[in-house]
Amino acid sequence: MDFTHVNEQGRACMVDVSAKDDSERVAIARAVVSMQPETLALIKSGGIKKGDVLAVAQVAGIMGAKQTSSLVPMCHPLMLTSVDLNFEMDDDNSCIIITSVVKTTGKTGVEMEAITGAAVAAITIYDMAKAVDRWMEISEIKLLEKWGGKSGHVKR
Image 1 (cartoon, rainbow, N blue to C red):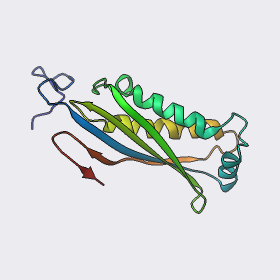
Image 2 (tube, rainbow, N blue to C red):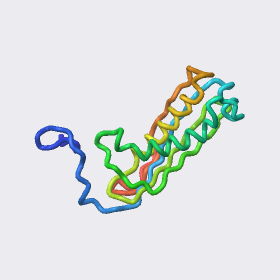
Image 3 (cartoon, one colour):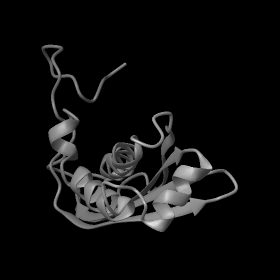
Image 4 (tube, rainbow, N blue to C red):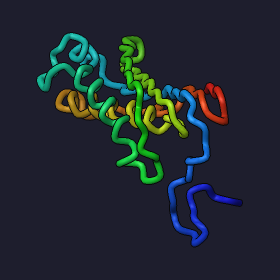
């Protein structure tokens, strides 16, 4: 088996994408933060003492997507053209569903940036609300959809 991230000496390397064509690339990822109903109500009402939880999580998720190549060793640094996060408050399941959409035009995809953006937003929600709900749970961090590049459109 040939590994893409291993050089001729058997050491880790970043894949050479220089011969690939530039194309528009988009990735959508998700994370879910489950919590007590009272915690969700506090977040919705602006009652968390650290401030506006979703506003801070929005900025944190964008920053996380932009820093992915600094966190994940084999990721290429990318010029992101768009990062957006959406938050759905699910009262029935007492959770916040985070959707991260990341775009670029380049030689490699933005799946890791979308996943990192969703994960960092989730961690930020936890950090902002942990004083009232230490047992929140972050789950379902996953890629939902991507398009662009050689593999085309892929949807979970």
